[in-house]
Every structure is written in structure tokens, then in C-alpha cells.
Length: 107
Image 1 (tube, rainbow, N blue to C red):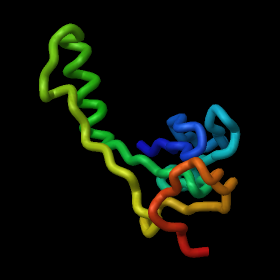
Image 2 (image 1 turned 30 degrees about the vertical axis):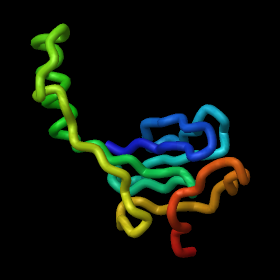
Image 3 (image 1 turned 90 degrees about the vertical axis):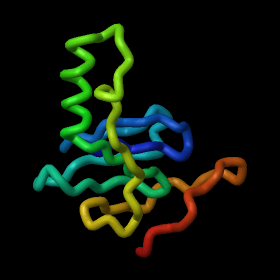
Image 4 (image 1 turned 60 degrees about the vertical axis):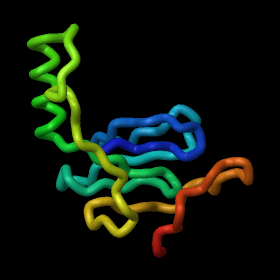
């Protein structure tokens, strides 16, 4: 599962085949027809969530929704701009007061 983090408004959006926008509208993203590769604007970040971890955590939470357990934790990461299943399109540049990601992707 991939999420898009907007560097402008800090909104997080779950990506689908349909183009989705963050709350401020400066970032967008969607899955391509292969349902694996995404395209999204830079400087948004691509956040990956380990699918099996997530669904196992949901099952564990459903069994005991009031209890904390390591079974309800999931692995997540920020995909690097070199990740082959994430493509970045040029997006709105950050304002001076906004902190940029470490590096621009290669054009």
C-alpha cells in the first residue's frame, strides 16, 4: 500500500488508480494500470506500508480492540526517489519557510 505525504500541508493520502489530491491541492498521485507503480508530484513523499503487516494488525486489533500488543504494529518506510515503482512528476515548489526533502529526483 502506498500513501502520499504532502510536503506543503503535511496531509497523507491513500493512493488509488484515480488521481487523488492532498488537502491543500498542491500534491497529487495515483496508481498506474499495473496497480503497483505510482506517479505523484515531487516534493511529496511516497510512503510504503507493508501490506501483510497491516492486514495482520487489523485482524489482531479486531480480536482485541482495547488491548495494546506488538501484533498491531506495522512496517512502514519512505520510498527513495530511485524506487522503480514510484515515478515523480514536477510539482509545486516549496515556499522558503517549508523544509524541502533532501534531494530532487532526476528529471
